[in-house]
Length: 281
Ligand SMILES: Nc1nc2c(ncn2[C@@H]2O[C@H](COP(=O)(O)OP(=O)(O)OP(=O)(O)O)[C@@H](O)[C@H]2O)c(=O)[nH]1
Ligand SMILES: [Mg+2]
Ligand SMILES: [Zn+2]
Image (tube, rainbow, N blue to C red; front, side, top):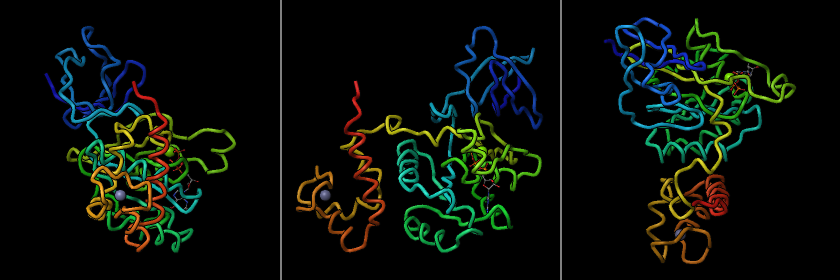
């Protein structure tokens, strides 16, 4: 019996890391292979088949990934930054107890825009401004602790970051225009890359399609996942205030006074509206 970790899944074949060695394994007959995920801690029996999956910290559906501890939310000046997507991912992290790190990539293209984005987020999360074309990308390495994933819009440079940090990674990279031509993202599967000492980083595409329906909250609770609202909300007339109207609302006051980012607040309102329209049964 040996313990290991699932790095990659292809059909019913699992690439696992077991005592510093990488090997392929199948699930024992009594274990369904669709119940084993990348990120799972597992036990291999003496025949080399997976015979047990340990209890998970969390399990994400799309992309399918178990035990995620940290998420690098990647954004860049090109393609046009989608800060709504960034905020959606940050809410997702808050809900799932994942530590987010905002990674503003391609600083070589537009340093000014990178700093503008940094200013919005630096009080809320750890922010790194980097470029995969120079050494600044190495600043990300110290944040890789436990099981981590790269998430963000297509073409922001997630696979390029993996390749820059890990020479033998060989993650597939395409130019932005090629992606548009093909009408899809380059990275299609989830794969964990090993950085040693139990630190792993997943390249993934699935988060870019994260729709609001996957956020396990409803619109009334959404405000709890925007941490900068909590203090100003003490000034709201009603404790149930959802900050939708100017009247008697501490959060609106804070936005007007420039204490809460207008961008974040507008994204909150948008997400609130979308969540409200999702029917949950
Ligand atoms: N100028 C510049 N270009 C970069 C940088 N990082 C990545 N790129 C380019 O951005 C394009 C997209 O990079 P990818 O790594 O494929 O992006 P991705 O986020 O993995 O995209 P998907 O797999 O589709 O989600 C490629 O042409 C890269 O060469 C950077 O720091 N600066
Ligand atoms: Mg990619
Ligand atoms: Zn309010």
